[in-house]
Image 1: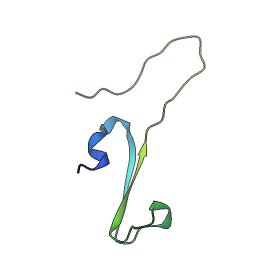
Image 2 (image 1 turned 90 degrees about the horizontal axis):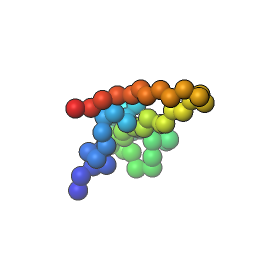
Image 3 (image 1 turned 30 degrees about the horizontal axis):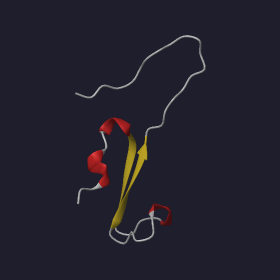
Length: 59
């Protein structure tokens, strides 16, 4: 079975934190071997009358 991170593109991942050995409680219940905390980029919206396009490009 593939890991969930193998299905995501690096463009939507903001910071990634790796905890070795015993991880903090907020990382999960069964984290004796370690844990990975991944934050996903959220949508940004601007209240403006003018249309602007910006972002990242992945090839």
